[in-house]
Length: 245
Image (cartoon, rainbow, N blue to C red; front, side, top):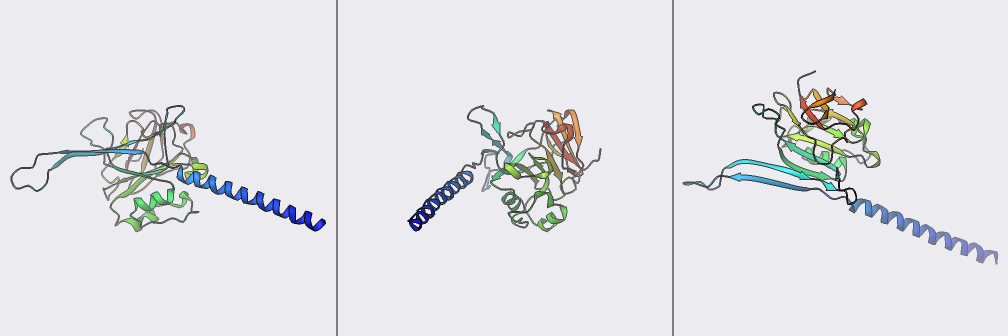
């Protein structure tokens, strides 16, 4: 009788364990499949072909990220880890933001860095974003784009507990050497969401502003900002250049 009771108990425990494992596996699957990339709209203005031209001349082009929208609140939501390629600010046009040329988002920070560096920098799944520095990026000089800055939704460059990031790149291999980048209005669901930041590639000053159009309170991160102090979750515009404050 005791043997039967022991075997029955083992069977029940096995069934419960199977159910828990199945439930955890389902939760993990839902976590992995719930990630959705935002819609990215791109445009190009073309000139008519003339004479012996084989293709039209592109006079202007760009991309816009349409972020996910919360089904309940209707607010724009930042999503994933996005690699966004931008152009320098046109200094001849006051108040202009950088233009987005391309964008792609990933489920993990490691995947995003690999994409941003054409696979030349590969981080292990358990590596901390805090360890990413200019020395590591030197191995990616042959990549088509150059990482100039990264912003995180969590302090201390953390991606724990679903922490998100934005990785800013440019086709200018000199980075901020002679160029400035930035946005007069933070887009893509990141308004008042930034909690830490790093600058790379000759970019020595990462300015974050409380209000749009580079106004209000400001924090000059120089090249590293593990925290934003009073500006935590307050950024509405930012600028990146090599001019120290």
